[in-house]
Amino acid sequence: MSAALLLAIVGAYCLLLFGVAWWTSRHADNDAFFVGNRRSNWMLVAFGMVGTSLSGVTFVSVPGAVGSTGFTYFQIILGHFAGYLVIAFVLLPIYYGGRVTSIYRYLGERLGPQSHRTGAAFFILSRTLGATARLYLVVNILQEALLDRLGIPFWLTTLVIIALILAYTYKGGVKTIVWTDTLQTLCMLIGLAVCAVFILDALGLSVGESLARMHARGLSTVFVADPNDAHYWPKDLVAGVFIAIAMTGMDQEMMQKNISVRTLADSQKNVVALSLVMLAVVLLFLYLGGLLYLYAPAAGITATGDRLFPAVALGHLPAVAQVLFVVALVSALFPSADGALTALTSSFCIDMLGLQGRGDRGEERTGRIRRRVHLAFAFLFVLVVMAFHWADSPSMIAVILKLATYTYGPLLGLFAFGILTRRTVRDAAVPVVAVLAPLACLALDLGQDQLFGSYRLGLELLAVNGLITFAGLWLVSSPRKS
Image 1 (cartoon, rainbow, N blue to C red):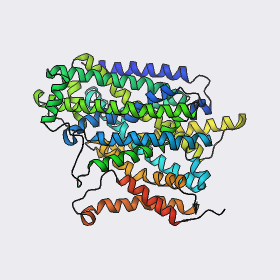
Image 2: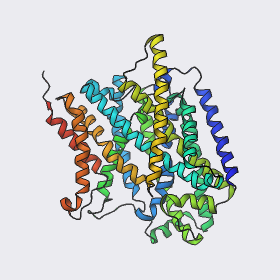
Image 3: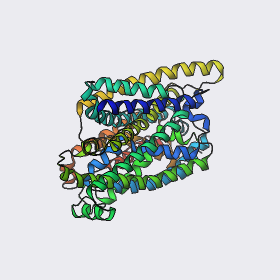
Image 4: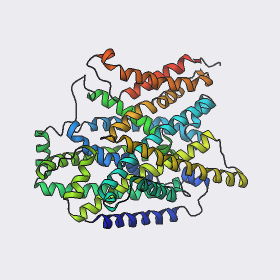
């Protein structure tokens, strides 16, 4: 299928998104932008959050990584399941009890204003890097598959896509993305399923036969039994718990959608439903990865990693599958960026600038500043995506998880200290502790050979980072006076 026709289909899909955005953003105010007026339907939020949690990285990188790591990513997802339960029954009651707009306000109420700003600052850093890494991956695939053939440069592709995301989130914010994410998640899952069916048919295998072939080639290994391996199953399982708690439960983007639901009980249903759906969906992604690695040698495809799925879908599948792949890929792109852009704007306005928007004049002022901040983050996204383009990592999921171990660790330690202790922290020292903890983890990571011999630190470095932050906070705290 021609690149121009596929690009026209992408354009039609974007028009559909704009239609949904226009419909949902009518009469939207600042409260609608920040928390959807706290009227979001929990089932829509749960389904839409699947797309946000997966993103283009899962759509392309998880299947692409099967060739080197098998199904071991599922170890992390099993840990996510336990982590989601902690979010539902420990963190959400705290957020709803304080009726917060930004979840980092809890840190301010419990520990102090510097802790509040420190938590928000680490979220802003984490989400900016994570969202732009995900965005870069999909933009790069669209560039290589379609736009290079049309002579469109990468920087222009990036600029146009971010402008589109900015345009449909500019007014409605959370109220809009609850609906657009639902549409995008549906399109992504349909594309995934159809591609898997076509590849399975091309191989001439049943599901059972394909799994047997994957097992024979060592592609379907789930659990790693070597304690020295970076993916040893207890390490990945524990890391999965903390990654879910930190990257979902302590992330304003993810929680902003949850606290837009009317009641705590419905929000908890949302998180539990998400945890169950994620188990099934990630298994399907891993199974697709196995199919791709069975199909590639027979078709003479040498691409691996993030480039394998696009190479198979756009070079060897029928036209209908190519269309659905491109639509699914674009659908995977937008949820990881639109929610991040909205949440970063909300966090900066509320946590850093202290905007409240009370009264008519306050509402007008907040709206004016919010729009400027929204534009500034969109421009920052362009710059960071271009930086990732320059770096060009072959597996973005590894990059994102690695970044998370450093940037989400202080958030994990801050929230854990606030929830698990009753001590009073010296608030001015909190930013110092939060910066030193990731630096200590970097030293551990770089000195693994000298410190641990054959043992390799994996994603459990996130928990270590949180523990160092917790210990540092303990050292700069004192027992609360009764």
